[in-house]
Length: 169
Image 1 (spheres, rainbow, N blue to C red):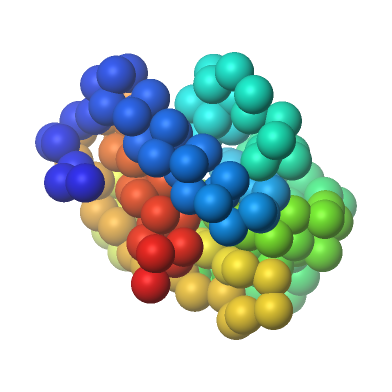
Image 2 (cartoon, helix red, strand yellow):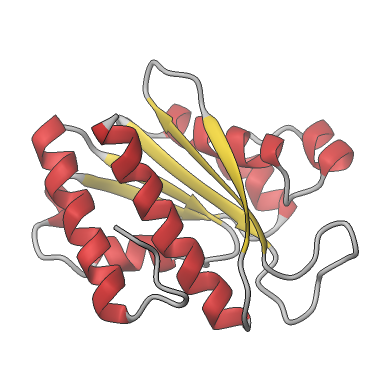
C-alpha cells in the first residue's frame, strides 16, 4: 500500500486490517514496542474486534529506563548510539520477542517533535525495527516531514507496512 503523505485514521485502519489478515493467515501473534508513537500502533491494531486472536501485547517504553527494564535494551547501546538509533530499534524488537510469546515484533523509536531534534537527528528521524521469531531483526531509518502528529501517523503506517512486507516476502 502506498504511504499517503499523512495517513488518515481510515488509512491506518486499513493497514491494521491487512496486518490482522496476514497474522491470522500465518497463525502468528504480534507484539509492538513503541517509543515515539506512544501506543498508537497498539491502538490501531486493537481497534479491530477480535484482535486478541493475533495481537499479544504492546509496550510503551518512552524513557531509556523503560527501554532497559521492559525490553532489555543494553545501557551501553543507549550511551553509545542514543535512543533513536538502528541498534536501539533492533534491541527493542528482539527484547519484545524475548518478553512475550509472539512470533512477530515491531519496534519504533524516533523524534516526533516539535522539540528534541539535533542537527544529526532532526525532528522526524525515526528508526523502525521488525523481527520474526527465529530470524535476525532488521531496521530501517525514516525521515518523516510535518508536525508531531504527522510524524507519528507516518510512523504507525510505516511500521504496519513493514510487518506486512515481512510476512509476504
